[in-house]
Each structure stands twice: as structure tokens, then as C-alpha cells.
Length: 208
Image 1 (cartoon, rainbow, N blue to C red):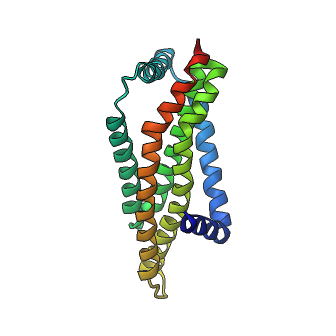
Image 2 (image 1 turned 180 degrees about the vertical axis):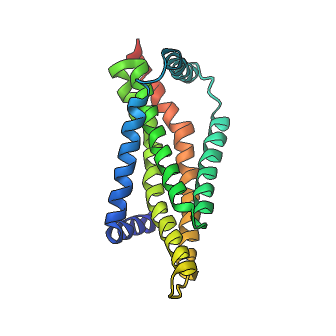
């Protein structure tokens, strides 16, 4: 835990401008995702309501398959990181990496608005609990993107620049942080698939 805090603190100090850009992009994505639900067709809005209601009913009746939820969540997050990792090692990867980052923030905003849209003001509490593991992941994704953007930049400099750049240490650090991120993903996947449903269940009484 101390090592994680040290890395986060070090990266935030060294890359304030890039972090500000990424959090700005994330904020735009979250806001866009939050208001998107108001623009889609009523039929699609009803489908969203039905999905959220079904999800909450599964929690209430104890029908949620925690192992299946953990597996799906973990696989989804791992593929997301692998996609970012692979794209960052290509010259044209930077725009695609930023797009995937925006999509992830958009989905967080959409998830929050879905609970609020389904349950009104009461849905705010559920959306907060539901979003916690996603927001934790998102912080680490932001640090990950700093590595990814730097790797992409160094590749461009190496291929088209006149000066030689050593990629050994940056890529080594990148791989190390990627491995750390996989550990974080496993932990947050447990939180999302087991802990979050547990806490949501404790507050289902407010929906009565």
C-alpha cells in the first residue's frame, strides 16, 4: 500500500499538466454519459430502467451470482488494460488510448445517471456505492495513461526523431505498473461483485 501511495504521489507531481488534461477529459466524459440518457429514445430509457430494476431485484432476492459477476468484471477490466497496453506500443495508439479512456468515463457517468433516472433522488446513494470501485480503477487508469502516452511519444521520437532514445527503462516501468494494475483490478473486481451488492442490499429499504 505504501508503494502504491508513493507511485501515485510521484506521478502526480511530475505530470501535473497531463493529469489535468486527463481529468478534464474524464470530466467531459462523465458529464456526457450523465446527460446521454435524457437524449435517447423512451424505449431505450425503459430498457435501462428495466435492467437497473432487475439488477436490484437480483440483489434483494439473493439471486446474484457473485462468482459469475466477479469473472465478468475481472475479464472486462483485464481486456481494457490489455487493449490500452497494446495500443500504446504503436505509433497511432495515443488517440485510440484517449478515446478508450473517454469511453470508460462516459460509462461511469451513464451508470450514475441510470440509477438516478430509475429511482430519482434515492438513486444517488446507490449510484455512489456502485461507482466506488469504478472510480478507484479510474484513478489508476489515469496514471496508466501517463505511462502509455509517454511510451507512444518515445516511439515516435525513436522512429522519426534524429536523437536516439532508450526505451528499456520506460518500458520496464510500464510493465511493472501494468502488473500492479492487474492486482488492483482483481481487488476492485471483488469489491464490485461482492462488496457493492452487499452494501446496496443494506439500503434497499429506502426504495419502499
